Length: 356
Length: 254
Image (cartoon, rainbow over all chains, first blue to last red; front, side):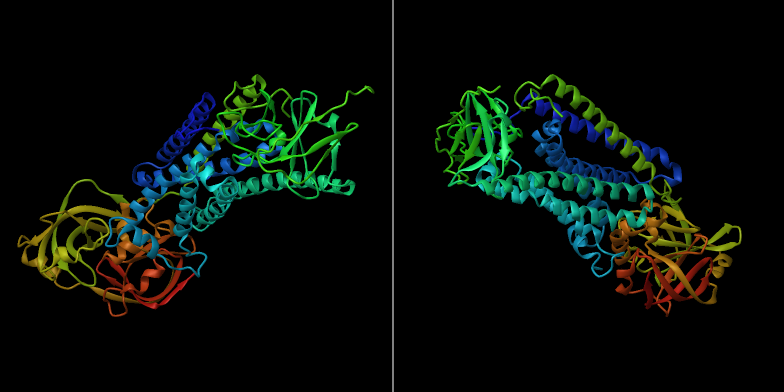
């Protein structure tokens, strides 16, 4: 949240996060190069440039796996949410490492000739019909352009100006970049380095990324299915979404109604309020957040909204949709039709429980 | 799962138990990073024993411009009275322009040697690399007058078209698919194409490639450079160099 744009809103967590990313990259590159330098020596030594190309390429590939696994991991276990908090910096770092890989590779393999290196990159191999001879460099180039697009639009300036849904859709293209990079590796280095370890690692990476997304997706789908069954209890505009005792005090709960957008319910000060589940920032799940300083606080990046009207506390200006809500006995009922972002709704007061 | 009180907000103080958990995660990630980096690097193939020697060397012999720039020099190597050294320029460039006017003449050439699998190349120095030279005696000049050529029949080989400069030590490794673009640029730039053949036991042998008439090959081979291919060609020995006379139509991708 901000009232103006700054390059990075630094805080201690971001500094620690970035230090770990930088340290991890330096550690990986140093160990890869030392291992390569000591593996073959003398006449058999691998060229320094090729060692650097391989170190940087495998490092960026590994970093992309961490980027992609962070999302589903955080869905499956909230303790991984801090990895998500500053994931954009990891994404930008991934692009920079990949750019260094591409720069040295283009200079070394496509430079020093009669043809412009970029022309050579595009024209030196046009065997598009052959799998074994396929120009794998073009796949890497396409992935690099996507990573550039991700990095260039990673700032909140673009998030705000493109709008969260469009920004989110744009950044989903990272999965296309990953698919291109898997092919870049499979049709490139795996064609010459016939190491079962390397092939196994590439395969394991695909299985881990796909597996985590499938497991997290199935869990979300189960939640939505249970929510869809609530439609059967429709009573006028009101839909029963659960019992007040299901919502811990000063915390949220997520409800899906009739296959529509998820609704976040919050219990605080003896009341229940309902808002959209989608944070205006990056679409974070507000229902998994909690009430801090009287405000709904998103679990992803800590953006805040007042539960009664969906407005961020001044001087911030973000707004989210609210829902009409009422409590009948111990049951919570909401009107699934969202109100305009920032619309004030009277919180539903919880009757004292005389049974417990 | 996290305790109910363990709610993380990036700009607030990190909950204690969550911080402890994340320290383990960070340590695990760094350890995995180190292990993967080290083991991936140790799984790299041997790039071969090509050597780009330090220091300038000078050779005097008979220069030929066709099929590719080369010099034939008297040799004291066992079983090799004459040695053929291919001539190349800096970067991915052939030496045709550098030896202009010296075709068929006795000359002195100067540069750095690249060597692998019994084949030597000389990368000519920037300036003063090639000039006429009269220091060879008449007997040696007569020995270098014409190459000794012996046809060895038609052969079928499995292997890869390489640029000998990178293969012999300019790049390590200087072969295979990841090197394809570079090898293509080198050959298109005038560096003589060669063929590295693998036998059933995986042993290598290296051959200079010409067209069926013994002339320089044209651009039709470029799409096949660095690909695993099978070729049918006429093999001949030219002094110490083995040459494959190849019709590009007889290249099959494997």
